[in-house]
Length: 183
Image (cartoon, rainbow, N blue to C red; front, side, top):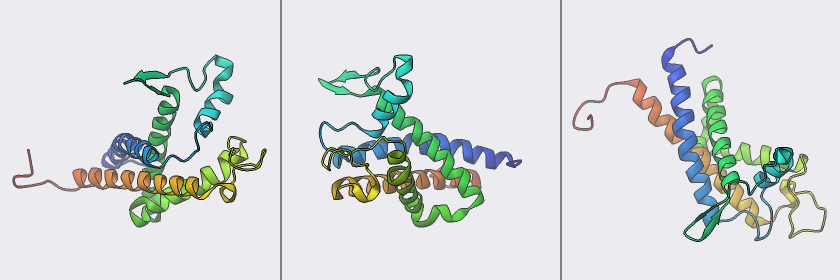
């Protein structure tokens, strides 16, 4: 399928670089615009608790203190892992269907928001907003405007950051660079 060595390298390097950079971008966007209200469990934390609890691993298993702030290490690791996974999905799909790159990756970010936060996460029972009526499932249309805005913008930034990394990787493999730019 990817018989060309360069194609395989583009996929590998975009996954690594795009996964790393997009994890930082998505995490950083949530600092500025938190998607949930204080005291509400995040879907990644709920996933970890539900899926790994039988191994005595929960969302606080890897917590650590950094400058008197408690950082949820397990949730951070979860975000990093899915950033690498989705960077791979992005570059893999782009190989076959270039339209995924529409709007410099923003289209991909919108699709991920709709698929994951609109359907899959609530379908699996991991989103019940505390600001809504008790027991309400967190389908996309049940989320408040702040959460919608945060998730859509965060995933758009995230998708665009993967695309920028892919552009850089493609540029690296496409042609030699001459002049003072070259080291």
